[in-house]
Image (tube, rainbow, N blue to C red; front, top):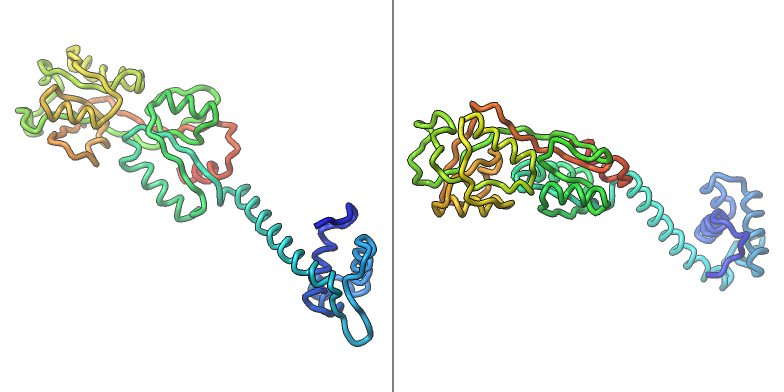
Length: 294
């Protein structure tokens, strides 16, 4: 629709009100302006367009053929404009949009599902992308803008990122189901001095790995590490098949089907913390809403 550069949005809204009411006084009341002022605006619009939009006499107001066509098109145009501006406002307010998450496996056991259920209830039009990633992969994704939020097991992050601890938990031993050690007979980790261990790779998180090794240090021995991996399911399959034992965050004892048993290490000093991490300068409005829930 070709319009004059002088035609303003208000002209179109005024025209549509008159076209729908076919009565200048009622249209003026609907628009909260004076009737003479509305008449001037319509005449100004007609002058800018170069053709009449209404046939007027003392008894009635009617649309010209050009006016009838313009009414249909302007109604559609203004409806679309309202939809666009409302969507833009929703994006600005964080009620619509997209969030990309990274997470280490244990975050999916309780933190992320609970968080997303609550967030979706309040902001159902925000969609999510979820990726299981190692800690350093998440840090890289956050710094380059591929991720909006990460869940990591790191004590320190780059200065451009904000870290918010969300869950601190104990460690648990993972043993084959037929391992002779039971909860009733367990006293300390030193009882596993002769076992081989399957641990998360230091690449998963060096600080986390150092913390696990400190558990063994406190127990007075250096473990024989037979396998390293970044996947909890791999650890459980190896333990299940007798390749060794392991130590994992206690939250990882839930949600897996494997022929293993767990002994929670409640008496040791070590604890592991899951933290939410995001870029301090991230302008995604939906992120602010989610951080508010955290």
